[in-house]
Length: 95
Image (tube, rainbow, N blue to C red; front, side, top):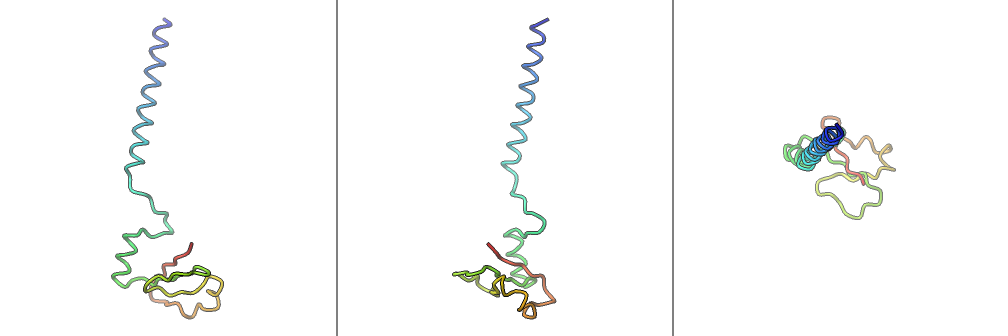
């Protein structure tokens, strides 16, 4: 009777371990998930090539510029809202 209980426990532990290993492997192989309020790099490149987006760099004190982006530091953004287009989606870059 004790052998059956020990065998059942061992099989249960092995089954749970196998499921956990499979789930871990699937998450490691899956593409990184992009949060809904973000744009993936591939999507960004496609939208930018089609001219469908306005790229806005809002980094305060940025030392490097993003090619083709409009630079308006976040602390100046409210005063410069008139410079933003109303006909395109705006993608902001911040860090």
